[in-house]
Amino acid sequence: MGYKVSWYQFTQHPDSDSCWSLSVGPDGRIYAAACAEGVPGGVVKVVRYNEKTDALDYLFALDEMVDDPYDSGRATQCKIHYSFSPSMRDGIMYMATHLSGPPIDQPAYSPWLSWNDPERCFRGSALLAFDTRADKVLWWDTLIPKEGCRCLLHDEDRGLLYALSYPRDHFIIYDIKKRSRRDIGRIGSVNAQALFIDKKHRVWTTSDYGRLVRYDPDQDRLEWSPYVLPHNPEYQTGWHSVFYDCCASPDGEAIYAGTWIANPYLMRIWPNEGEWGRVEDLGPSTQKRDLTIPYNTFLDHCGGLTFAGDGMLYYVASRWRDPVYNPTPPDRKEREGVVWRLNPNTLERDEVALLERPDQFAQYVSRGAADHNGDLFFGHVGPKPTGIFKVHMPPDRKKTNAHLPIRMWG
Image (cartoon, rainbow, N blue to C red):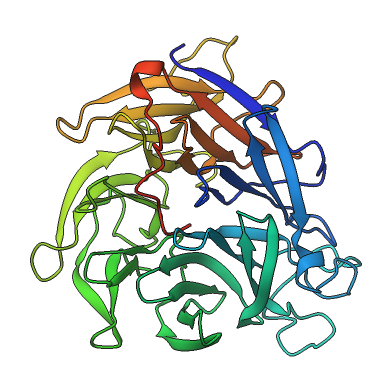
């Protein structure tokens, strides 16, 4: 159905159980994080799609680059979580790690239990600068001691990186030139999964209760919106309606965002209009459901928002077998990842492809990106070893340097 899709498994990292981060680099190539967060001693490996060989190149194991070996006895450098941030001026790809991988001799890791244990505690989110021109790690630093980085954003004009910490959900600013950080304060308890920046250099995210949160560098403080973001009014209050993914329109005027809750919603935000921007409710991104049945955010999910060379927004939303709303035949998988195309002018949506793993379900996509050739790529979370998808765009919908303007956040 629709566009051709290829699957690239992380076969050289068989412990990989998730690909949380996928991004186009400043070189126009696709980078992905082969994470291993459920394995004792698991580490993340950075991979890059090689268009000449139509395969994945494994660049490095991150624990080796930041002197935090997998068998140290501490919680491991197991994943990069929505934390690739490019630098167009010098070709650097910044990346920061997140926690959850247990020590090599323990079945699980709790950051609170091990907070004051120097032998077990996560050393901290490692920030790494990778030169995509020379294929070389230039330097690394500890971005957030004891905590992981949930998401990362680069303000290239001001030389700043912004991050959200986990588990304390603090807003962090890192000065690249000075190699110094500032903790601006706590937002809440339910981490947002994304940050975005507007033309005034204000950085936006969300709180536990579905309100926009904004950092204004001129005021040097966090501000909370009085309005709650769109959600299903039948059974939701806005709690947990935090950003999952955000993507800027090509002209930079609007932000398309999806939430991280059961029954995720799409919205379009015009951050430069009015005191708190203008938010358009684009409705639910996944199918109707029987409200008497509980659903989890792994089954009911939307992610991978990205613009392509044709000026259309693409994203992946899950679809599952339901006797009332989706009575798919038995020969179809009971869970599917549907690639949708949304026209920003008309808001019409068209189903253009299905993501299919030969062996497993493919309903959960983390992030998406267009490479310099105009093809789309999506990171997948599922049974190990996981991998990434390539959606081959039709020739009439491709253009050179389709990845520009580049996305500056993970």
